[in-house]
Each structure stands twice: as structure tokens, then as C-alpha cells.
Length: 205
Image 1: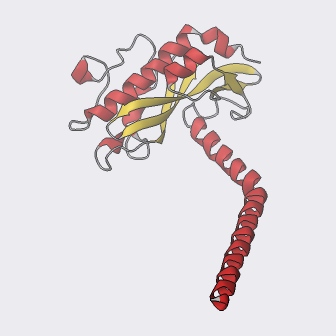
Image 2: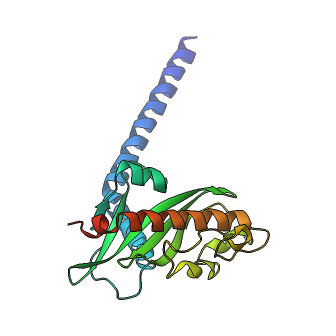
Image 3: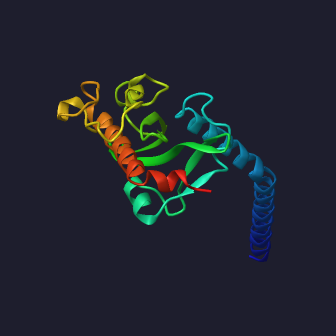
């Protein structure tokens, strides 16, 4: 019995030491790579945001130019409390704002989007950040899969922000209407929000 007890204590001590060493290694790895990972994430996000704007239309760092959103705006866009939009400038002058927004009602759940809005109130581009739409069917909303999202460019609050099946202005693929409905409505909310507060967004320091 004593041998068994000693063996159990040794096993427990070994497990404890292993757990402590593993935790320390993970913590050290996180500390050493945190800044690199964050920088890579920011670079990828910046590249995707840039795709929502005309090439060469801005010369500042988007990620370093956040635009404050009030509580009502974040709620409209389906965003967290710490979310921002991003101001694009050229030679110091505001030329566009890039918004993140969430379509809550995709076929597979939430669809996260980036929407570029030009200073004249028109949509410049749309990119999907994340979605769970059906591969080969609803995923045509992603610009990596099709050119469907290009139809939003140049549209403003005068557009009917629905798919044509519902009396709106926007195309969709039969059998995957839900995905198109969700994205179209979400882009429309961004366009409406931006145009209602355009001067406020463009006047950000």
C-alpha cells in the first residue's frame, strides 16, 4: 500500500511538473509571437480593406485611421462595442470610409463583410471576411468565387436594396437567394448609414 501511495504521489508530481512546463512554454511562445501574429492579421485585414476601394485612390494606412462609431451605428451594423470604421485619405484629404458589417441572416449564419464607401456617397466595393454559406452554391457572394459582388459598386441610397426576386435592383443565383438577400440588405444598411452621417465620418481627425 505504501509503495502504491508513493507511486501515486510521484505520478501526480510528474503530471504537475509537466503541466507547469507546458503552460510556461505556451505562455512564452504567445509572448514571443503575439506582435508578429497581430502584425500579420493587420496586414491581411488592410489588404482586404484596400480591395474595397479603387486602386491608388488613397495613400494612408487604413488600419491606423480608425473612425469612431456611436452605439446606434454599431448596432445597425451588427458590430461589437469596440468596432471602428476606417478612413481613407489621399494627400491628407478624406476620400472614402471602409465599414465592417454583419449580415446576421445568411443561409449558414452570420456573414461578415467589408464595404467601401466613397466620399460622394457611392459604394466602391464589397468583400466577404467570413461566411458559412454552402460551398458551390451560396458561396458565390465571395469575390474569390465569383464577380457577383461587383454589382454593388457605384450604388447609393437611391438603389432598391433588395434582390430582383423581391423587387430590388440586384441579381442573385437561383437556389441561393438567401445568401444574396442577406448581403444586399447589409450593404444597403451601410450605404444608408454612411450617407446619413457622411460629413461626420469624413471629418474625423
